[in-house]
Length: 267
Length: 64
Image 1: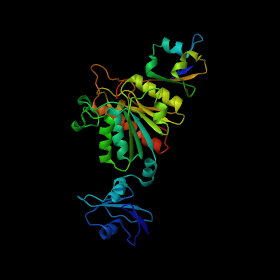
Image 2: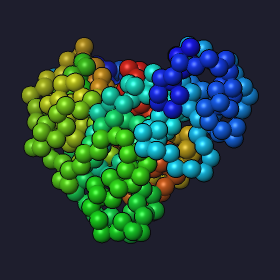
Image 3: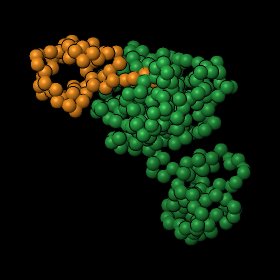
Image 4: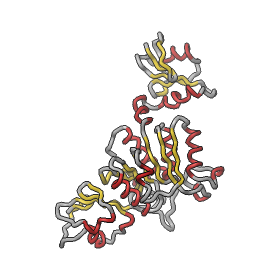
């Protein structure tokens, strides 16, 4: 019976997952069968994907990818790996979206921002003290390489304007709009929908303050535009941006990107 | 015409520009789709609205 074990197709005589583990690996290995970590033994069938992870040891590079991807449903992973997603703005939304998309293994990420990491960013953005003063593109790429070295990361340290949108984002499936200013959000959405005929945009509006988490939602007001947020609570004096709602909103955007990569267009 | 799912009666012929202005909507923070097509911002003054139109107006607030 052909079973994929840690990324390699093997012809096995073993009937169950634990039998295979005991013979190929070690009794104490973690066993992941078709994306699910099992605690009880389970029968193997043809073409199953089995991942054995030895506790406390660093796997060889070749084994690492299959181990990391073991928790993703196999067919989902293939599609996600083919995805090309651009993230415009690497602040509270964009940096957190990038981290999530790297974790799920989106094959190509394009990160665009012109800013550097400042102390006031640390309350909600995915950066560390050691990143202060660095361009956000550089600081974020360093993190993503530590999270998932198997994806392609392209960066551009540039301000997005009406004049460079076509050149920057041509060839991508999806743009995550992750800007701060409402004028910039509107500009990106208008110009992209007009100039890039197949692009889908996952945008955000309304995540300031500490109103209920449950007000944040994903809507699809236009054919190729998704908007995440509560649609009302903008950042203003007395209503700052804080990590919880910003991350909830980033999570909404990232999940919508995942759904689109899996050809699901409903919110 | 229909605006964001609600029926609105237009009392006189007007452009998209006039309509947005009458609603005190800030042009710089929105996107408008008419009958499924995004309307470039520079053309709002040339778009004459009709009873059969369906508009989706998305307004962006700050924060990210």
